[in-house]
Image 1 (tube, helix red, strand yellow):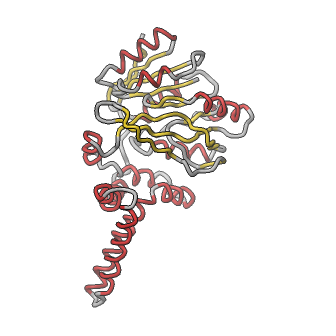
Image 2 (cartoon, helix red, strand yellow):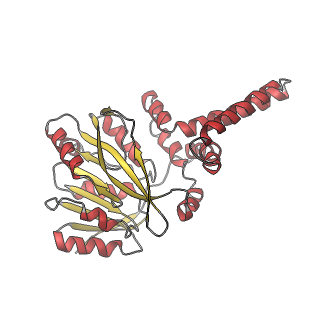
Image 3 (cartoon, helix red, strand yellow):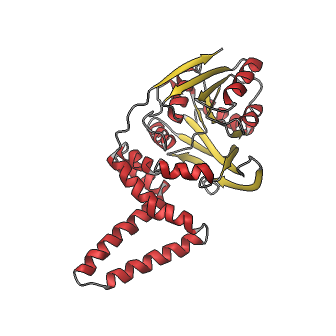
Length: 314
């Protein structure tokens, strides 16, 4: 069983659907798209028998995945985003591991393939989790195969989380059983650079990293907090530097000017290390703005339950 979610994904959705196994039972969920996504899903459903659901209202990925979880028949279930071209070898490996009761869920590596604003492949790629070793993990991305036993638990995504919902979900899954990570590539994620164009403007509008604060407020135990800190270590480093700067300024006021010099050196060394891999604009986002957004998320962690309507499209 495969569930695919998509919002305004007409650019990449056809390639995603073409890569699905021909004998798979498929559910498609459109999240209030304004482009050709609904028609692409409807055409695929008519050709293959896949069920198509339309979401309207306050929708997010958590809501869309919960529609799949609520409507998919019993059995193993692959949750997939509509901009990912599935590697069927990964799916076969995951199903085998679940059949052997090695885990309650399985995930793997993901190859990001970057495109420009017109949808052209730039030839640039990045392997997510490229250094992670095979074995049990505590968190996973949105592409994950859920075992039939796990599904019987009735676990669902937290619909009040519009970002970091995957980490929240998988941390809760890990309390019920093992999430197995395999080094096999799950598929190719066809994507744009996050900070380019409209996505970059949206990052500022939504104060993107507020979601980290909300995630923390839902996992106030030492194990989960340490895991979240490792996942978001860039933001954590920025927060520590900002707090150290405040302490240094207080020490200067108390007659310890050396403290200001020490924190200035710390900022400089961190910046030089960061700029070896990325640019100054990314540094300002990662070390300055992201920690502030995360702190704000701690204060407004009580995100409201979204209101939406689900329609089965015939």
